[in-house]
Length: 408
Image (cartoon, rainbow, N blue to C red; front, side):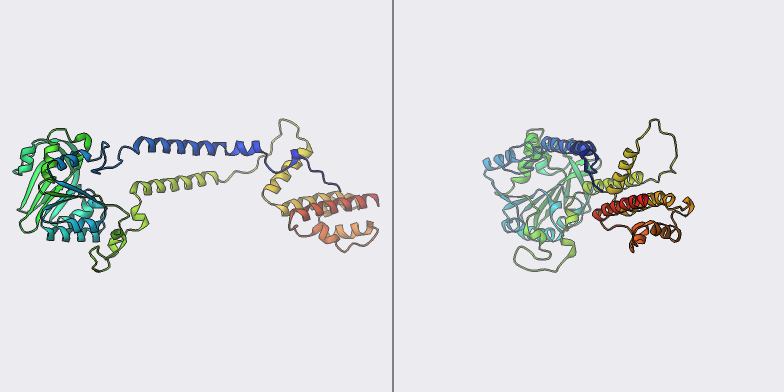
């Protein structure tokens, strides 16, 4: 039997069919990518150089750094814990811009170094992850809006500055050597801790007074200069995640080795913002619901009259496409053999009821053949072919068998 391959009857999808199938998915991906790029372009510059004394952006701190230099205060920028602790001293103010980024081991190392140095330490927006270690005895409370507030304390720096834009995290302590300034809802957003033998510590709930675009509002500049300019040297510590001390466990930057602490090591999951984890969970739930929706059980097949006449060749071709798409060679072979037995039965005098009985059909077909065929049972009632070539060969052999029986 000659097999003619026509492009119109090929089971392989055309380029147009592929485009129709995937254009919805591509459109959704394009929308997501465009939205991501738009958000990145909109917000990427907002926090560029945040609290960096070298940055002139709105959230940078170059303005206050230049004012301090004009007053004779040297400003040194460091990004590692080793540089920060080695630069601390009695004539130095150490500004820690992101205390919450420090690991517990880094926090302990920093607290020990600043206590021994007896200088001033200014901590910006120190929250629960770091306040217990960097400022023992102090508790961090919920954040309050940043707005103009009065000092309401006896701290000279606050009294001279007057009203300033403060807020953010609020603090509480039972220490008698603490000055609570700029209260927000009953709790101070600036806490000054005096340590007669170990310098002093300033906790500022929000870093807004150091931003370039807010320095000239109210008494922000005066408060920032007095807090950071009380000593001739200012060390501006910008903690970074690539600091080797963040992954060294119990190993300290001063060369000594302490106890290994599992809490001092941050894994990959710990570095992922919580919002991304929640977003991933929501996407997973959405995917699960979509899978349940798409895998819903269909009802029984309903037979109905077609509104138009369908040619037998089209129906056969469509069914063949489905079989090939699912690699259902067993069902295709069973359909070919079933149809062949149905056509052979009346030719050899077998009733339709016994057309699919090997004990009845095989002897009748063998009697009509000119020569005995030992593979007749395998041909008519055999197993499924192993590949497409074997399936095509089976169709050819069944066709040849029918022709031979019909002409005999």
